[in-house]
Length: 136
Image (cartoon, rainbow, N blue to C red):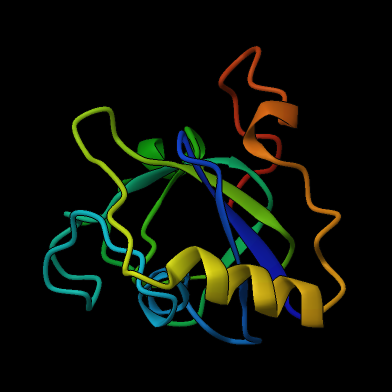
């Protein structure tokens, strides 16, 4: 079963294939946001993990993602692989860009996976801005 990613503040939702990174899944559906090297070496793509759990299949250097950032729920989408449904938040200075069919393709695949039950942005609790689950 695939997991679902929700990107705030836009509320965009899409499924992630097993073993796929957050960034790879977003790009597969035509969603884009600020990134750098896409290899885990620069940290330009750091985002806040609002809820859910992630693992890193490859080691991430302390210079790219510090232990303090990790503890605060900051994730590196180019390397992070979800192990549950996740909600991430774009940086206030960033915006989510969409391809012409991004939302339609994501909705189609959510429907195929019988995952349209995932809450929309307005249904997500955001009262304390603290990650519901720490990164693994």
